[in-house]
Image 1 (tube, rainbow, N blue to C red):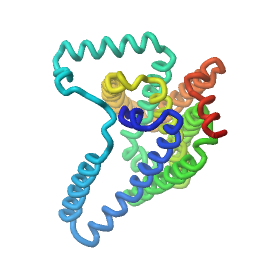
Image 2 (cartoon, rainbow, N blue to C red):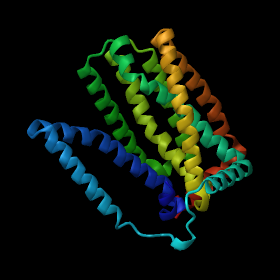
Image 3 (cartoon, one colour):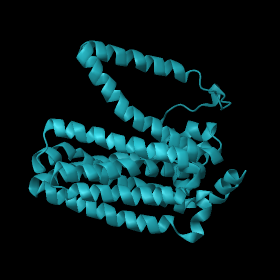
Image 4 (cartoon, rainbow, N blue to C red):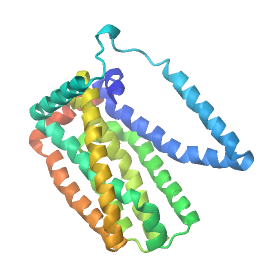
Length: 295
């Protein structure tokens, strides 16, 4: 995330992140399809070796990326407890001085934890509660990926026409609606509708929030801020998913998923009001984007 912010000019980040979402979504569909075909044509061992080789090729390609930082290796601090404490201090200072940016990104992380918790119970819910077979579930994931690809294609084409705020809010609300449909699903057809909706709009949300983050967090501390945010997310995620797993054993799994989806929807609505506040437009650099489009 930090490297993209260094390499890509601010006015081009939204389009870049949209194209990147298209590439990721496409890989989500094409990768498993190629892997399955290779297993059928060769063997699991050959497929794994080919995958490993392509990982190496990817690493080699990364060597050709331009170096954008003039770093004196002698000034790079060693990883010590005191250095970690200093990093926490820097991030804490940034969060206290930039409360709105911190609120939006932490709010996004918290809401997404609900989706992670539901995803952790996805296989059990779809097969034991709704009654899908393993084939149905595999087909469901593929259809979801197709929805993501279509959303990413449209976003990469029309990204400059869509406000960053609307990318975030529409993406979040509609993705949450997809989870609500999923929670109340009773058949393969109904769950497909929910998954296609959440897959389609998830692309808008991720590209929007990533652009917002890169535009508002200084590159000089972005790596440290990202690391601390991810630490918070990982810690809360582990505890939350564990709690949801216990709740699913104590009460109905259907009731647990429905409760999560409804709370996620209500949280998304509150979050949307915060993003759409007229006095917060400057954080989304909409004027800059407009100038770029006019040129």
